[in-house]
Image (cartoon, rainbow, N blue to C red):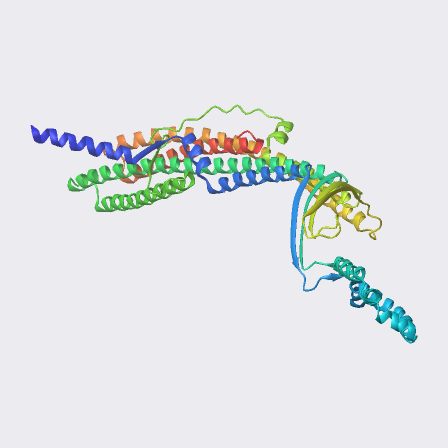
Length: 499
């Protein structure tokens, strides 16, 4: 009893592990996973983010720019406003005057000293001798030397270490419409990136649907092949019995064996095809390649056909198709490039303000201290003549805009042609589905009658083999026809922009 309970627990455990390892997904699950994990889609999303940043960058051109600059410079020599000769004359102005006075007084004194009476009076008078000595050494002249030296110093500027700093504010007032054109281009570029993201999403959905239904088709072929192999094995056993009873020949036996070997080989190929297709779907969905996916539709006896009620007009297609919207946005971008090319040759006006700090400063003499001042003004630039450069640039931009417009018109025609092709493809797929439905019904009836006849010994094994092959082919074509209808409607939805 314990062994039975233990065996039951082991079976439950194994079943739970197998169920956990397998993952049942619907078509919408595969779409969601592919949209979430696809690398190209992430790249497109980052391009949308980049376009948003470009939009913010373009808007910043409306706002003032603030910048700061600073500099330091060391000079080997100082600035000297006067020559060495003149500086020396200023610094020795007192000594020079003293010499001039002495040169004037000395001849007078010498003439007086030649008179014996005057000489005797001077020699006998200490006061006169002191007065003559004071005339040769006037103290005021020494003060003039000191003042002259100070004045000479002020004519020598200490510029060996120079510091300067400036803060600038610049605000554009008029730029020929370039800033506005750049902002509109940035908005169009963001919309264009979003449209390209939508296009990428639709491509991923179509690719995922195609992989999903391919697996469903192969899975149904695998089930048909497995049934066919089982039929051939049963038939092989029956033929062996008939050969033993003398009711069939060895040739019939060998024929069934060959058919069985071919069917088993086909089954292996189909199984490998299903495994590889599931690995491809896992890669598209961002899952590990060894994930055991079980599709919701692959185990059904028949593929469910959704109801399609797609209604659209030509205007709906033009407004909803992302490729056309992308080209329209590209046309608008190139039209703005025309404005930008024209703006390069229109006047530009801006206001500015500066605050400047220097050391040495020149606002209180010339002193080695930091002092600053501000200024503001208006700057204007007016292009005058460029030998036709601006005119040709504008013409070139207009030609690029015209090329984009022509591409848009051509793409519209191609899209409408594509829609018409998919509409016809849907009709062909529906007609094929109707024919395969009738063919499968006939093949089932033929197989039933052949099986009854073979079991009663009224028809040979080759006839039963042919009926089985026809039934398998008819059933496979029926499943593929249904999938073709589904994919044709998917392609049409993408073509009209409703996917």
